[in-house]
Image (cartoon, rainbow, N blue to C red):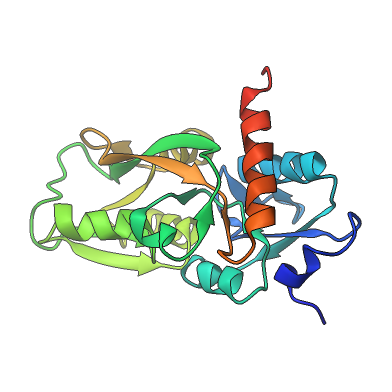
Amino acid sequence: TASAREDVEATDDTPLVVGLTGKYPPFNFTDSSGALVGFDVEFARALCDELERPCAFRILPWDGILAALLAGRLDVIVGSMAITEARAREVTFSPPYYESGAQLFVRSKDAEPTAPGFRVGVTLGTTYEQQLRTSLPDAQVVTYKGDVEVVQDVQAGRLDGMVTDALVGAWLIREKGLGLEPHGEPLFVEHLGIPTAPDNAELWRQVGAAVTRLRAAPE
């Protein structure tokens, strides 16, 4: 069968193969009926409409999603991926489709994240993980496949805190009653883009133009 990358040259009826984890609420996750929902999913569908192609979603672990793109199993990733210098050496990014920041959330306002033994959860392979190891060198950084698993261990009392997107954390606290609160200022601000494989310049051009049009559209 043709790879996702090869499919780009096919007709407009060929689906755009979109990768995401499905474990990053409220941006992309499965609801109680098993449907894939969230801002990333809605944006991906709007992107497909702009490109006049149907969407085909593929759920993959975060730590393997770039490899899947480079192997031709995906056309794009619409999964809240931060644009970084390291990633930009491997893939080509669209302009940002939104901006946000990384935030440390803790179980108690009296928490001491700099103290040895502080257990903090984070998704493996994210920019948050890299920042955590620098900012909290004495903390015990525990990595997971996605935020869903991090939240489970927070609720079970196995973690003292977690690092995730500031908007994600606020949503988890409000909608899921997660017993955390933000600690200090955001660790950094991120620009989130849509990567394509570096040998697919035409798709990169099309996606970039579509993102620009969508961001310019009135609310």
